[in-house]
Image 1 (tube, helix red, strand yellow):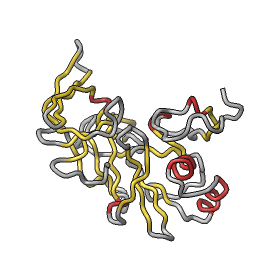
Image 2 (cartoon, rainbow, N blue to C red; image 1 turned 180 degrees about the horizontal axis):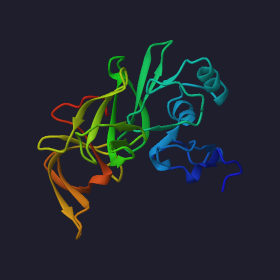
Image 3 (cartoon, rainbow, N blue to C red; image 1 turned 180 degrees about the vertical axis):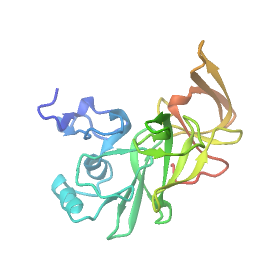
Length: 237
């Protein structure tokens, strides 16, 4: 148990955090939000401890207060803001852009991307439901809600255009699609979609059959994210 609510023990940090476990005892904790704890990393940890882009939290506060950092095209003042998979961090003054991806060990890192690509965000459809007024609401993996979007099923992905706040493309599981492991021992690995089957009496659990090179593997759809057809739309590695 940490002494402060905004810190945790380094030993208790999620496995996706690329940090030293046995140096200082405490490390920043992600602020409450739509991203699940083990699937995100605090902005200050990613920029300071993982990438070494800043020296300390005070420097990050200055950058945030001076509007020198954008996250998915928006301004935030929270140094512990949760950065999740494929989020975009931009530095307008230096015209540098980075995307949060998983390395080959399943750790969240920041990968530099082009200015053009920084307008694109890949998200997973986590829920679709009818809300008050008979409107159809789609909930995305980062907590954003989109109204009136009929296309796309739960577990499909959307390519979101940050420049106009609209869905640019729906990416579905189909033959030849590229699939990205977001969790488990293969996190960060890209595979080719082959088929899927439904399990259980109610057939709510989906098992996806994939190929990695010459190897055929199976995984729960909960550990995966479909990222495109023959060529990924965004940087994922």
